[in-house]
Amino acid sequence: MTPKDQQPDAWFNSLGAKLFGLLLIALLPVGLIAVMQTRQIGIEAQKNAELAIVALNEQAAVEKRLAIEKAFGSAQALAASSSLFRHDPRVCVDLLGKFVATDRNLMSAVFIPPDGRVRCSFNGNALDMSADPTFMAGLEQPRRIVDLIRVSHGSGVGALMLYTPVVEDGRFEGFVRITFAVDRVNQDAAGRLPDTPTALFLTTGAGQTLALNLDQDAATDHLPANMDVADLITAEEPVLYTQSKSGSKRLYAASPVIEGALHVLGVWEEPPNRDILGAQLVPLTAFPLIMWVASMLVSLFAVYRLVIRHINRLGGEMRDFASDRTLPADLSEREMPAEMFKMSENFRQMATSIMQDEAALEDSLRENKLLLKEVHHRVKNNLQLISSIINMQIRKTPDPDTQFALKRVQERVVSLATIHRDLYQSDEGGHINAGKLLEEIVEHSMQVGADDVQQIEKVLDIDMIWLLPDQAVPLSLLAAEASTNALKYMGATDGAQPWYRVRFHKIGETECEVLFENSISGERLGEGTGLGTQLINAFSVQLGGQAVIEDNSDSYALRIRFDIMTFAEAADY
Image (cartoon, rainbow, N blue to C red; front, side):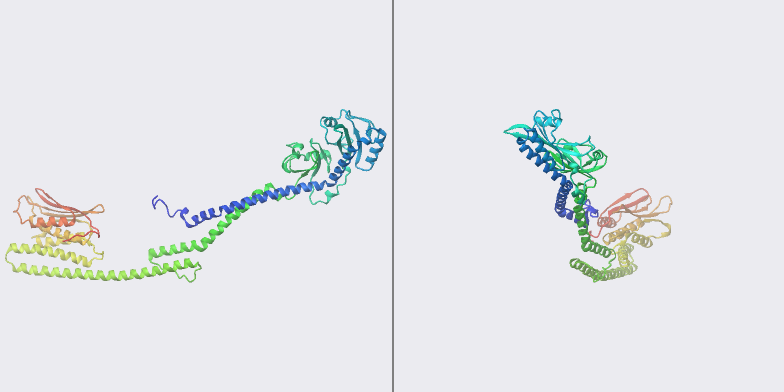
């Protein structure tokens, strides 16, 4: 890529953009670590919040849970001692009756043999349980079973039926079943809690539910709509947030009372510590990102305040100095770092030194120009003096040929004097207005060389072109020589008026063309000395071109095209 293709003024090449990219890369690991740590903290906080909800769930049903655990313990004790009463109905009635009377929450106690016919009960009544679904399920795999019921057809007391298997010598002997009135257990602990669930249920492993703090029918609307209760209490997550049957979102938390057999299910409308649950993990994660971006912005502002704005100001002062040589303002009142202050002070000193050097160079250049003009002036005076001497010699010489030769020499001296006069008067740093010079030389040549200037039609088509003296000198001498030859051989046919045309034009940006053309008569004069032709060819070579002669029946033309020299070019004469 070339320097022009790099676009130094593009925004991505600015110091601020590059610093932003470097800070972005430098702070990226810190930002990622902060995001990961914050996310981990959020996850831990979520877990703690879930555990807190589970703990509140357990506390809300602590009395019932303790009472149920006590009932389970009693059932296990009865099952362990069932051999003392299950074979004698009278002993059974007496013992189970006293057992039920010891706890107001106990409603019944019976022993159910494998055939399902109850002959041992707390009140002596005989029952047939052979077709009971819960009993039949227990026969298939004897285990501890919990059955939830509503006494008096679902509108009375909520109760638990606890089935405890009786096994002796590895043989299944039946079940001890006690009925426990859950609604009679006091719930003072729930009233003392700061947060309580909207609905509280007891659930079995099979998915049965028993509402503890609401009417059973009303409590059903709080159960989940899209999943079974059995799946809810066996889920890996201790807390789930899903839609209830009433259509609103609810938070569900389950905690075991009897592992695998009975659980407490709490339904929360507005979960406690909700601000740190999963819904709020995104803001927690975004916080370090915001701080990351904020830290980069603060860093960029500091860099701008301490560096960039001073660099921009220094760059503006450099542009002002480059355009109009304006010196920077006083630095004593600026607040900037020491390094930037030294840089600005160095620029101020450099600018002052440059202006002093430029002033010295301008004085030297002005002096050199004056000296050079004085040289041209003296050369011009000397050449005019030589011209005057030649003129005196011409007047004293009687021979016409000698006079003609001296006049040709005088014309060449006058041409050189004219050039030095223009150099003396010019303010263009050594350049000469070649167009104006040609006009003067042609006019002078016609005044000196023509017998009757009024009889000659003169056409000058000349552009004002500036040339160096290295080309202006041979061009002026060439013009003088060409004009002299034109006047010498000028003529006309059939009584027409003689004419002389000079054209000087710039071709393109680097070339010039000069044309000398005159009319001639049909008669040809005798051959000359050939000196003029030699001089014309020599001057053409010095100009860097080649003379082209067009000799027609009624006109004669000299055409030369050459390149305009620059200061790097030079020539010897």
